[in-house]
Amino acid sequence: MTRRPLAPWWSGLNHWRERLTVPQFTVVTGLLVIAAGTLVLASPLCSSDSVGLWEALFTVTSAITVTGLSIIDVGSELTPLGQVVLAGLILIGGLGLMAITTFLQGFVQGRSGLRQRLDKGRALDEFGVGGIGPTFNRIMISAGCVMGLGTLVLFGFGFTDIANPLERLWASLFHCISAYNNAGFGLRSNNLVDYQSNPVVNGVIGSLIVSGGIGWRVTQDLWNQRVHWRQPRLWSRRHLSLHTRLVLRSTALLIVLGAVGLLVTEQFAPDGVIQSLSLWQRLQVTLFQSITTRTAGFNTVPLSITTLSDAGLLLMIALMFVGASPGGTGGGIKTTTFAVLMGATRSTLENRTDVVIHRRLIAPELVLRAVGVTLASALFVLAMTLLLGLGPTAGGPPLVAQTTFLEKLFTCMSAFCTVGLDVGVTATLGRWGQLVLMVGMFVGRIGILLLLSALYGRRLPSRVGYPQEEVFL
Image 1 (tube, one colour):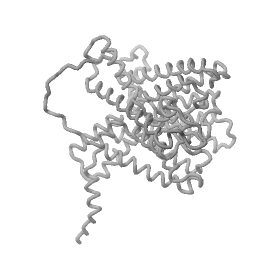
Image 2 (cartoon, rainbow, N blue to C red):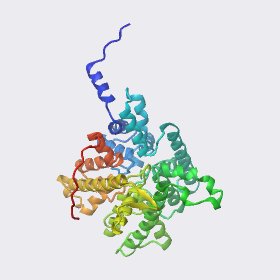
Image 3 (tube, rainbow, N blue to C red):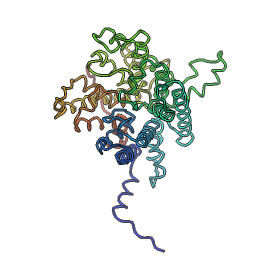
Image 4 (tube, helix red, strand yellow):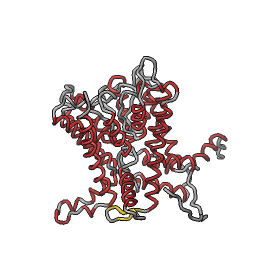
């Protein structure tokens, strides 16, 4: 029996598919997932009539990139099925869009040459899922256990104001999924403002944000060192890898400095959002906001240009830019990138040519990578802010107050760093401005370097040497 020849268009599609590198395959798969999720979320089974294709596209993009920016009310405009679909999209994006697409590549691509295998190994190493089979299973199991435990605590002691047990259970599960994956979606229009003084909700959500943001490498390293926990005399931070120590120290330092900074900036702000709160409530609010600003996007106080000081907004922009840690579910330039830059700055001030952190030499390639990621990310956010000021978005829609530069910069940083905090700008933007934010969310989640690799491919290192010449700085 002779096989029928393939159609020319199908043969061409297969040829194009087989030549895709991992970065290109990741970008294409992400776009396909967003397109499919948009069609599902816009259907009458998942949303009300007020949610069209555009609103569904923006919401799905925000969910896949675990950002949390939204132009709809998730709790009222999505049906229970739509909320389940949204939670599933958050899991897909948060637990590793890169890992999933790389895993699928083995089934989809027809060939796997040396170049593809090398690319695959590099991508897996970058996103903390080296050894995609057992490791990915452990990631899913550990994430499920953490989110399950958080759901039980919120159900029993957190969302006690919800009388219906099923509604309380779903609210607990949805917020745990959103928190662990650093998405920031909530089922209430004011997010978590109603639970501003609830220590259980603040504690559980904050803990899930941190555990999801530090990354799988750190979690695995801490778990592997559990034998030393049982023997305090043998315990030493030197048992942990340099990566783990940098992540834990940077995370703790940024949380404390962010909380103290917000407490100071908002304490002396006239008519500030924390002026009417007690000291305990102020500490609780600033600590929670410091945690969520870097990665998640939840808020327990109203956020706007009138409720927060300019200094507070600028501090939050800086925290968002640093973001979470490599292999985690958050965005930003990453805590380790920030630590390497600080180490390079210290070496420069000490007139040293090598970057040494905790008595470990940092490779020059990593320093250049940190500088490249930081500079490219900053330029991209500035370009987003510039585009957001063009056309109808420059002065805001009719009958809407003009948005300031600080509001535009805050919103663009929140989108690119996949944070999801909003000062009331996103819903007022036209489609041009919302398109800018969607592109920023996607690029921020994929990664600026991975996107450039997908566009330009991998270039072989040059064998040509050039003479050295001094440049004055």
